Length: 342
Ligand code: SIN
Image (tube, rainbow, N blue to C red):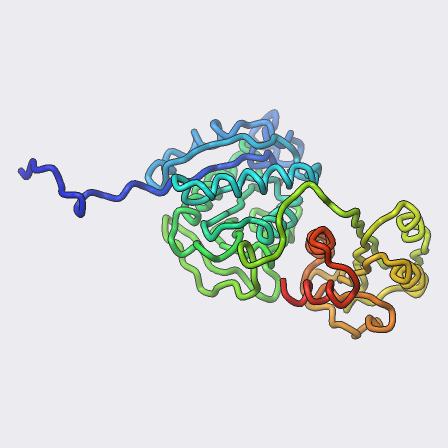
């Protein structure tokens, strides 16, 4: 038997150190009984409890847990976004942290993920995960999603890919991913573009990479200044009342969830044109769920002073519009550049 102490070159490298930041959600949800997957309270299980049911984590990474919040993500706020992004940036600036995993509710995960994609200032992996079934449920999906998220965050190939979402064995880019089901465990997809790769049984396989700039390559810096931006929708019989009220309330930007290729009911279009003429930023997105909104396609953007959201859905378009306005972006030309870039 060889009892020699291994030389430095032979000694196993320490496992990556991954911070797991918990914010609540169904992954931390509990119901009165195990067959209840709809009537439960989100965000009541602590990060320590979440980690304790996944012993395999200790074979993948050294975990540094933090409870950042305990909310149902429908109640996500810009103040908590600021806290979360600042904490992530602080952690990733430290030499002894190799990546971050965030447990989050599914309902606004795509918004938080895109916000972090544009404001985290590090190449180290940042991976969000969640669950569709509460921690108390039969066949809860949270534990495996958490293990897979940590596996991705600990993997060298996840560096420099921007913020990622690991869910149901798929790895998605924060820019593209959206929630597409109210109940299915396969609840997240990247419409048209598809996932970046997959994670299964400890194996991480990226099949494409992210092209648009993100994280350190953006001009966006997280702060406490959140310009007031709201979303309005176009539908049969819509009036201009909501837009006029929002303009009176001093809104800085409006995203319209238009029909089809971002087309807008005439009543709403007149109100939005008036808003734009008063300096309110107006961004045309689509309520369809996939595809692009073409500039000057279903509306005369150049003449009306509107901006096209491209392939961002209305909720992600709102995130980018807030950041662009906070960074000093003013006028449709500068804002369109931001939408064409990110
Ligand atoms: C939430 O978003 O916090 C509740 C719903 C979920 O996580 O699936």
